[in-house]
Length: 323
Image (cartoon, rainbow, N blue to C red; front, side, top):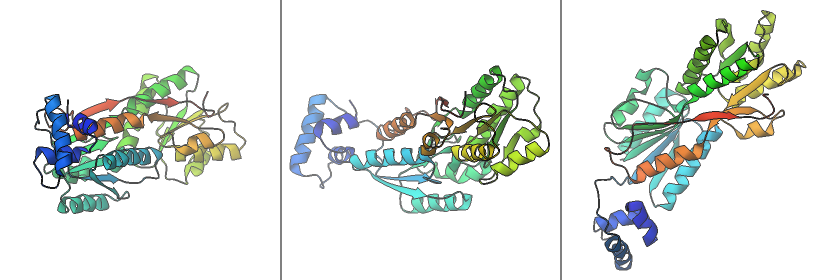
């Protein structure tokens, strides 16, 4: 039995159990007695697990549906346990992210939770401030990977998911797939690696133009340039649903059939994927898996027992934009 089980049986938060174990005067005699009754009956012995009193949750944006889900899920769970957890939306500027981390450290944050691989920069040097922060307090990353002492990561294997998808497209005779991505984030680069390795494995022999750093709003221009250069394509894989929807809208405006002529797959399983027409196929992981893992790791944290690298699978949620 752990501290979470004690809190559940006693009907109190884990913060209250922690106060009882530390003989805090802030606990009423009635509550203290109730918690101690459960502790004595269970034979529970306090371990070296750390109780985090103030957690800083950092995210680049909550416009990403997956990020928003993880933030909301964790915030509501921590609130129910009486844990002080504050959400900070940092934007995409690395300097702003670094400043937010330093500010939280100044305000005595006892742990960080970083939400989404889009928070992490592709160049490891640009993430060094997180490595430095982890020397002071534990850093948990939900959805991305960063190597360093005191950093604990749970993330989706998007690289393999894209590799499998290209394999399946090739088997269906789609020999000219595109890959488009809006930035150089860790997630995009992992997906690009999966795309390139699958193209090489299937001997597709595609030119560099078939993978493209494409800013939001420019998907139509990119596809138009391919048609102008007589470069044919029969599938589009986008690193997020927004780019996939932009590409679909452009093709439909040119009376190109989706998915008969061109299959389109996004990533993230956003709310728009199901609402758009044709509904959008999308690569995604199970956000609840990562939420459960991060939450339980926080509640029962010990540096000796929490894995620094936990990988969850991602796969295709098939809808009308793919066959």
